[in-house]
Amino acid sequence: MSPCNVFYGTLVHSLSITELEIITNGVLVVDNGVIVHMERNVEDVDAYLQKNEIKDYNLHRLNASQFIVPGFVDTHAHAPQYVFTGSGMDMQLLEWLNTYVFPTETAFKNVEHADKAYTTAVSRFLRNGTTTCSWFATIHLEACQKLTDIIENLGQRAYIGKVNMDQNAPDFYIEETDASLKNTRTFVEYVQKKESKLLTPVVTPRFAITCSSRLMNGLSEIAKEYDVPIQTHLCENPDEIQFTCSLFPESKDYTAIYDDHNLLGEKSYMAHCVHMTDDEIKMLADRKTGISHCANSNFSLHSGVCDVRRFMESGVKVGLGTDVAGGFAPSMLDAIRSTFFASKTIKVLKRDGMLKGGDDYVPLSPAELLYLATMGGAKVLGLQDTIGNFEKGKAFDALWVDLENDGGVDLMGMESPYQKVQKFLFNGSDKNLLHVYVQGRRVAGAASA
Ligand code: GUN
Ligand code: FE
View 1 (spheres, rainbow, N blue to C red):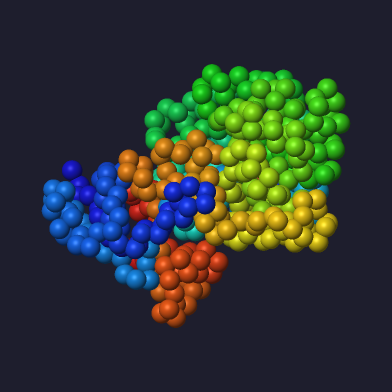
View 2: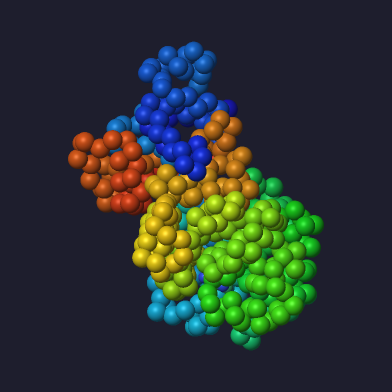
């Protein structure tokens, strides 16, 4: 048995959506990747360890510029698109998909290319503190298996989806319906056979435009049979919504298209959801389906500004997503900042009468932003009992932050613990992440060891 790891110092995590807890003299005892003790207000850590009969341990004392925070959960990113981040940001969704996305994703037919690109992408996300990520890959079975192997080696907690598309796509990037379903089964079985607690296959119809009814029905059956989650895109862009509804005139609205194909449920989550009626939001709440709020992407492809509080108030689970490369930043710190700006934009539009609602709208607080990037995402993925905060019994997925490590933050000495957390959220970078842990394993970090 290897010794357990004891962390003593400031712990920062969410108790609930509005309650950010900052414990300045906390103890976390991590044994075999799991938090076995979590204690507040410990004056003497040696006495605490003795009292609890913890004998075989490595003790890590954090200094005043350091704290530990839960690892970030990115609920929506496209691994193959990392190679062209920042390209085409002058376009809107459908033109951008045809110009950049489909040609780029086609290249992942070549597994060697996939190996190099995916290793680069996953490494970057880990360095940026994304300990859990829900990935879209491409339509290619072998490259999806390669992505799974890479993630397993690099140690990220991940949901991985083989993308499905059998219509309204270019000739060079489209599947036969039966082959798409068969390869999805093979992929789900490939991931499940690994019996890894970190890896989950996720059924991934790209979006309704590129999926026939037969494909969507078949995918919902696969998700049920293997008891796996479902991810897709919903109500991202006005032209997309109009085209989608014209393809499925028998469904009441875009959300109902997925519901009519049995794709909405407790294990489903939808990216974007920028333009939704109250009825559609209620449908998500009724089905217990979560959403991934992708604010950078919604600005960059000028899809729109999502009022995420509307979903929260309706009881819909909300997490954040980078949507690389619709969003240009492979970083959840950026997702937090983009979400902050989206929320402030909604506030201003309401105050100035350009959106309905009046002047009493409350934009998201720092506590809410950190919650959405950690616990909120965990709930969307159904991982609320595994990760998201530092409750005893959860996995140790965490970031050891050091604000003195020249990551873009200057400490002046007068900051309260809460101000330090805010300096990290608004000005921190990967250089402030000394160690990134998933299930207790160090998987990345700016410190040399
Ligand atoms: N809708 C369908 N495919 C995509 C994609 O790759 N990115 C984004 N942002 N939206 C999509
Ligand atoms: Fe996306």
